[in-house]
Length: 159
Image (tube, rainbow, N blue to C red):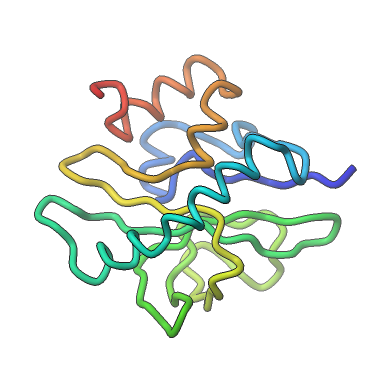
């Protein structure tokens, strides 16, 4: 069975360091997991709204990022990309987490993302993160301690 690495906890390395989240806290689900497939489909369906907001953010919006699927030996690795610029139907941006299996790419590497690679998107509005469809699927699978840290960091504990 092929496994998919879902690096969803923190789209920015600094926040990961603050929260104390390490590689051992990455959540794994099998390729094609039904809940994850549904979350990815929802993210892709709502991508046009994300694009509009990225092009013309409302007051209080920041931290726009996308998650993209990269092929690796034995499956896929999903990484967050920030500092986004639109490029045709895709995006150009910098890897916002340290990839585990993407040879030649490191945190901060510039990557060109085609629309078919996108599996999630996120932004913050007044300190509360929107999107993160795949992260929300993984929340129940995280340890209570990590789940609480993520919910606080993303402003979800007050919603």
